[in-house]
Length: 116
Figure 1 (cartoon, rainbow, N blue to C red):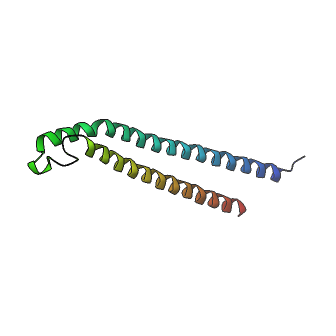
Figure 2: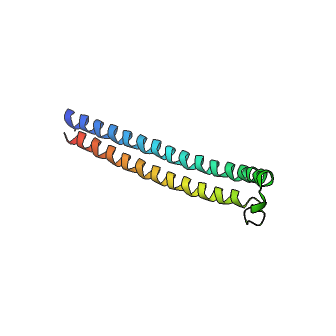
Figure 3: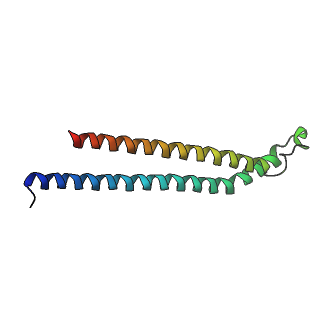
């Protein structure tokens, strides 16, 4: 049979476990949302940038760019999409690393609170 102190301690322990599980779920949702938003942005940009660069290439092409590899087609748009996709990947990676560090710091603080 458990004493009242042991029951209270078990309740606090279970409450802390539920809180940690809730934080993990919330952080997983944030990570998945960030990745999904970046993928949606890349897809939208990959559909929209070539039309902009085609319009730019036909309207503003100067005589000096007629022999350029980037004039007259959507090549520069695909280069821009690649650079933007790389930057978005870097931002998502940094964001997830910061989120993980924040999660670890919160876990340490909650463990210190339990010990006191």
